[in-house]
Length: 262
Image (tube, rainbow, N blue to C red; front, side, top):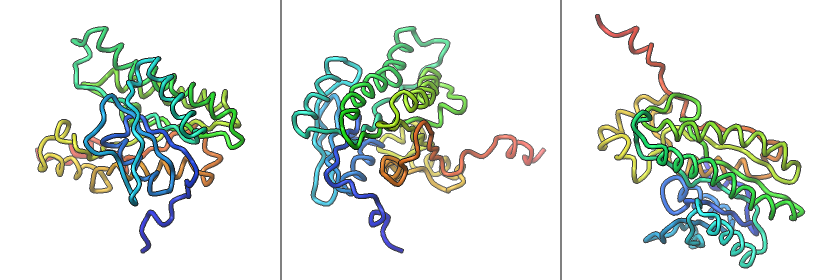
């Protein structure tokens, strides 16, 4: 079997921005686009020890806080000045610490909604303004979450924000067509350098993986390759949709309960 990368679309001459692209899922997405030949820009609040790289090429880093409007403006001004175009925006930056919904403060909930819903919308507005003036238009990908489609105990505001993202994607697909496509890519459980914070030690991660039909958690590159596909001409008719990447989903709890020994 040929390597997966040999069948990836060619992004030579294209410019891709990955927010939160210095680690975890974002870094995996950045590496995949680098492998596909793109000029990749990643942004974050602090420069990482090592930037995403592939095939001897490295992502370009911009220091920015995606929640801050002046910082947002600076991202796109620098991309316009340095590259003169933007073909793909990956709205990846986001997340939430665990907090019980009944105990978390209004300020906490507002900060989670700002990071995971409002900031991605504002970044998409900036990207759309650039892309509408390009003959080829562009594609905006929102990284969603399985949390938008099921209960999200401990991260209720995050799940609600990601559900809002799915609605947003559909509306933007209508408003910004036909030049700009808007899509969501929604991972299930992904194994990253911070998996231990969610699933425990290696044994805990292995037990979680056993609950997934695919037999493993997703790797960041699984999400990256999906983004490379859906942003490419191969998926030119995909807009307003949600690509769900969960390895077959989660085993329904009733199956275990109904087969349990009395």
